[in-house]
Length: 138
Image 1 (tube, rainbow, N blue to C red):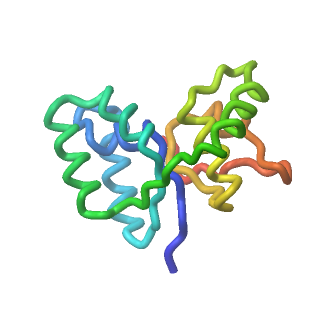
Image 2: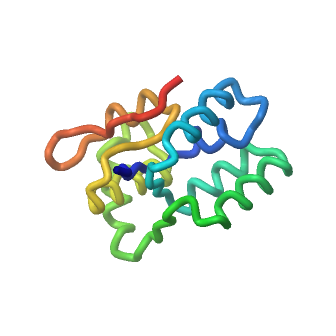
């Protein structure tokens, strides 16, 4: 049975940057969890490309073109929720991408996330008080 998870920037950087210290672990994780249904947002892809060289960017885009990840849109009605999330967590200065993932995770009831961000994704809380379940941490 597959499980749904959000995919954050750090995981994708590790997966597509051969010189990243988490690269081997990220590749192994993907191979071991081929039934996982991955979800993300376009700002994650933009951030990931910022950290990749040209070869890494091409590999990421080829991988995405195979439909391996469900990409979610950010709707106008999400913007005020994203703003409120940034305000709520101003003490840790969340970026737009993290705040958007929090909002969409709450809406879509997907609470798992692939990330190397141990700090922030253990602080963010959902309306019921629960936190993200981090699936991959090296």
